[in-house]
Figure 1 (cartoon, rainbow, N blue to C red):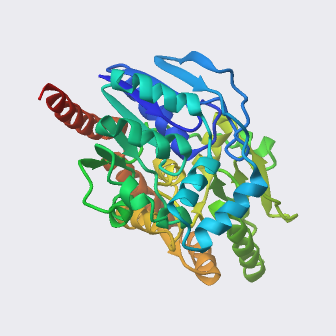
Figure 2 (tube, rainbow, N blue to C red):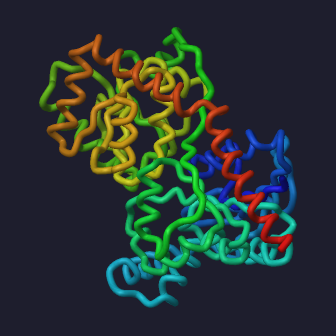
Length: 398
């Protein structure tokens, strides 16, 4: 099939969950299908400033077409509009204005869908909340497959979405909780769908700790992996960890933060922020972590959680996020917490129960083996695409 993938940003260096998911699916399908990624020239999701050249390029077997962002986001105006839309009964026009301001504003991408959309058998859209998806799906709704990556944040409650979520021809969800969330907001029952998750390859354990030592990590540590951002719950994680240190002064475990930092990190002898890490250091960090901590209140799927389980690392997750709680429950691969006290108890348990810690991590890895190896994930994707593509051709012949 000839498939278009619409996503707000694209590239190997983009640190974003939905963008990484899109790129991985594109690469795994590119040997069997003709894949074209339609995206912006932006690399930064805050400003949407153009950093890549507009036009066509290649990412291995994937064709990439970038379109210029008309103008960077006005952060002050966007904050004011967000307050208006989320705090009151905003009109349909104002809600549409919010999606436009959320960006990236790529009018030529939408023109491409109007003029060339029917040249693709199916058009897959990542992330409902960004402008290319919100305004692009209605243009090619008869062949649109939405990958919503929906979370329980304020945007999901905008009433304009009740109609929007009924438009696509089909849906690819990351977790059952996300599927339930979107179905609960749609004005009518959803069309064909599949819950696909994210694929991972098996990894071999790395025994050498010298790379960690060269980065000043010489003691036991728990790991946070991903963008260090308030929206990811990192401010609460930092508070909870400092409280744990005060309550368990004899425990010299370190909190290692590995990912781009978007907030202030407190000066603390047991908190180490590494910023963006290369793949070899990332592998070493996952191999030797005592536990992986996922504090986000909003997730459609935690790829970092799956990566930790892939290495047999048990998890400590924010139970206020239904997706994280569901993932941990299905895998039996970690401990949830709802408060600082429960966070400290989970930390202490893994520090004092080594055999149980290893068993819980192994259960997480077994869950990944069952559900998230690439052959199984791609089979689910291919099954839905084949079904929807066949239906779409049938409609076109009538």
